[in-house]
Structures are given as structure tokens and as C-alpha cells.
Length: 162
Length: 49
Image (cartoon, rainbow over all chains, first blue to last red; front, side):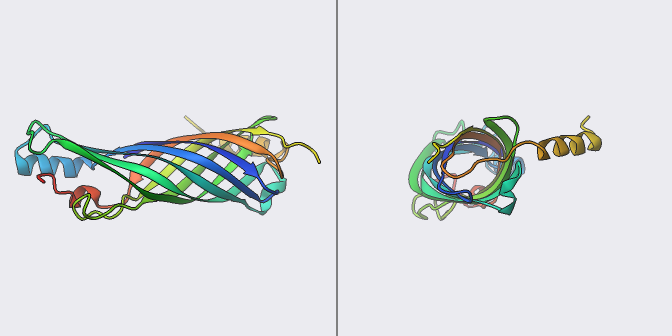
């Protein structure tokens, strides 16, 4: 399990639909049991594999019917481009190294926010993130999916009255 | 520790404040949390190539 950080900007086209841009940075390690199995199999106690993903894109948020209250659930769909980097750490120079490639990335998620002040809301969001990779770049691996569970703090700016 | 009563009270308090964003509003947000890999990246990767 790793962590993810996502700054984003959203403009409300109307009361139900918001469009915006976002960035994502996430980092992860392979599972401890997998790492330990590889260490044992290769007699390499220093082995580790870390991977990071950094990218940006656009998103759409569809606010659900409870919009008239302070509780605001929503659906979010996003797409963009990200750079995926895998780094192998090892005392064996033949194994150690890294590789990074860019590709299509996207996310689908649900979230909810609560207005916690005049210009601030707090909430949670869970989303499924995926990134497309070329099999030839990462030895047969064609995607790097993950589930993100995040706390979200939003600062609201009121639009100009018409 | 966090008690169920506190959660209910906090939820009720949040239910009585004003609505969230409307048309033409903007928001700047930052999210942070955990990322749980669901693929088999670690199992397929050939560490010796």
C-alpha cells in the first residue's frame, strides 16, 4: 500500500456538472510477501521494487440529487496522461535499475463533501485508477491499476452573479 | 477513541449548514490518502531483464 496526492480545480458549469483539471502523484511498493519471496528466491536481501505515477488530466464531476443540502455526493470521471516509473533496488547491479514510460491514465470514482465553513468543504473520495502501459516496455505488464481512498479538502469560490 | 455518538453529532451538525457549490462556482481541492494496487505488476515483472 502506498499513498496518493491529487490537487484539482473544478468549475461548476451548472448545479449538477463540474468540469476541471487535476494532477496525481502516487507511489507504491510491491507487497511485502512478494518482495520477501523474491528476496529469498534470488538470495538478495536488498531487493525492493517501487513504482511511482505522476500525471495530469481533466475530470467531470456529476453532483447527485442531494445537492440542495450541505451533504454533496458526486461521481467523478477523469482522463489524462501520466508517467509511470518502476524502480528496482538491489545490491546486484544486473538487477537494479529503473524504467519510466508515459501513457493514458484515467479514473472513475465516488465521493462526498460536507460544507465545513463559508468557503471550505471536507470530504472523502474513493476511486479506481488505471494506467495503460505497453507490454513491451514492462515485460508483459499492460496496466497499473489501483484503488485510491482519499480525504479531500476543498476551498470554494463563489461565481459572479449574472 | 472516536465514538459513534460523536460521529452522529458531527453528521447532524454538518446537515444544517448551507449548501455546497452552485453553477459558476469554482473549487480548489487537495486530496490525499492511500493507494492500493490491484494489478499483478509485481508478479509479472521480470526483475532480471
